[in-house]
Length: 211
Image (cartoon, rainbow, N blue to C red; front, side, top):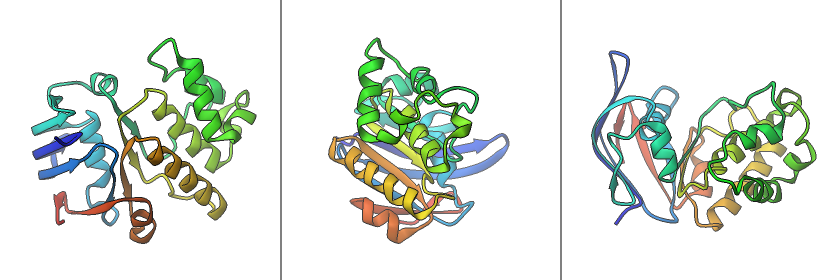
């Protein structure tokens, strides 16, 4: 049984039909690249899976029907979402950004695990997020998604706008996340980079799957 299974998934931004008949599966422990040009529907698909778009179709996580579930319920069931644009709370410290995403009383232990993954964040944990570099903000956004202990991480264009050294550091972190057993669905426009990180790739074009 797939960890995530979507069948005939369609979605809308308001009245605009952005996804049509998506069939998608992600296995436990698998990392899948979601490829496509800008505007192809990659972000819309991740938003739909996370519960942020109006959808129709079948959607199951670990065998459980999550199609009717709101975003916060999907997160509690093990679906983590790191949206594009490094959407951290800029007026809050790095530590507080992580704390607000905690779902359990084990938040301190989760934060410690994220600091072990990204020591840069531990060193800057008391700094307001707006003072962090672009790479550090992306690490923080990823760490916040990991605070919920997801089984599947939806990751939208995490390398966009990063300097080469920050990109390399983030790739290193993603490899460690893979090895920990977390499944990943990674949206990216750079096919070579994405496929170097992933077990396989799928292509989306004009809101439909090509492969």
